[in-house]
Amino acid sequence: MADNIPKEQWAQVVEKTGGPVHYKKIPVPKPGPDEVLVNIKYSGVCHTDLHAMMGDWPLESKMPLVGGHEGAGIVVARGELVKDIKIGQKVGIKWINGSCLACPYCERSDEPLCGGALLSGYTVDGSFQQYAIGKAAHVARIPEECDLEEVAPILCAGLTVYKGLKESGARPGDTVAIVGAGGGLGSLAVQYARAMGLHSIAIDGGSEKGDLVKKLGAQTYVDFTTSKDLVADVKAASSDGLGPSAALLLAVQEKPFQQATQYVRSRGVVVCIGLPAHANISAPVFDTVVRMIQIRGSYVGNRADTSEALDFFRRGLIKVPYKTTGLSKLQDVFNLMQEGKIAGRYVVDTSK
Picture 1 (cartoon, rainbow, N blue to C red):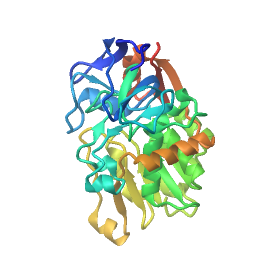
Picture 2: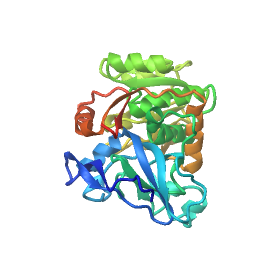
Picture 3: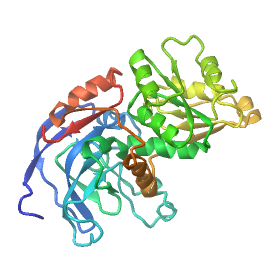
Picture 4: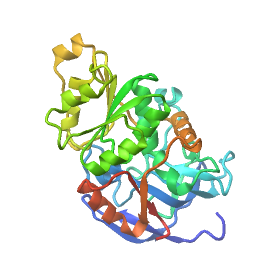
């Protein structure tokens, strides 16, 4: 490790399930043989980080925990086995921190499904600290020309929705419904859809989010807080009235998961991405069969998906709508998130 790397750093630590986070000094970790140490400059704040703190999921997290998995920074140290990453290179700490690289899933480039996958900000400490560890094989290679502050949300929000759109099977010219379009994931999904040649019907609540998604390229906005018949409104928003070819469910409540099969067209694909706590999805069997509806789950993308998602950003096709605050203010961001008052994404500056 370089001599100028400090022994202590500022971090936000969840000390017990339910929170809150505590802004405190902790030791700077040392990278193992196949790892890199990243000086995190900025980290996006994802709803998953709130779920991790609150213990919402049936998946055990480490405690105490440093959350975060959208960390953009600079490599400052590397293990002796790391040959393809340079000191000073821009990289990202993302949700998949590492995997075994040898199981049937890893062999097929489905490393997010690896039973031994390490999850940043959940099973291992993540990016809400000034220095974070990542497996060299899995850190995102951020193009040198990319701004670290803006690119941070691409490492999870952008990657996740890009993967979901690929999983939907929608083709250029098709229409997709994006539920939760005004949030951190949805605001990027609208742009990735446009860049991929898709039309989007944005679904969310409130005029602020409506204005945002229209600026980002949504064809139509359906406000669930004012709609008297959301299913009918979404169908009517498609060009032929038959409904969208696919629906991306990014919502943090259960109800949208129960509505989607009703408004997608026959042979439509419902892609579940959001993870509301204790939620279920159901659909009428008869209608699902005779209209040949597909219901799929889409998890985060693999390493190739990451490179592709970053390339859309590098070419200027994706603009991240974000606000920046200091790492010390992370609990305030979580409070706004719980109140549903965030349009776009929050990014924390680890120097503040």
